[in-house]
Length: 223
Image (cartoon, rainbow, N blue to C red; front, side, top):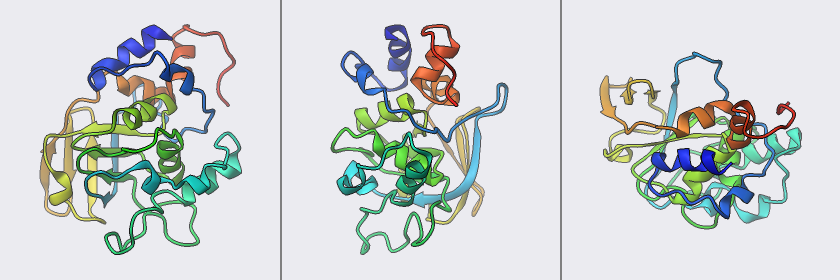
């Protein structure tokens, strides 16, 4: 397990997993699964946020009683994703009232996305709603790590302030094979930082499934 954590550090600076490795224990139905050899490319509508989106905005504390390992509660958790965003700043809801899923597979952020309390429910709720990738200038380290450990989201970074360049509802493609985001509304392309060694862990569905496949731990496959 420690060797797995060491491999992840290159993806975002000095990711410390000594205590956090015990937090990589939430059993969820991860939404990011790729068949072996399938390109790491995601196309869908973008939902644009700003700086300092915290975990209370992503999933308020009142919904943390939902248990992601239970399929019906996992789905319900997704219906509350991003519900804490202020209505005056975000008139478009990430998940529409009465729906369990979002129309936006791609979330665009600014700086320090996922700051605040260190709850694994944040990336899980987004993944349960149907998000597959976040593209932001920077992340809170714990949120970044939780994306990897749960296998719910690809946390891509960019040096470009995309939250000022892309509009909510625009069709975009995030191509992690060539590290480019394309905005199909105008044809513009933007460079992304490589996902690095975090990619294969997320592909597998999280750190424990990755470790199991690599022979690091001896457990039954995740169903």
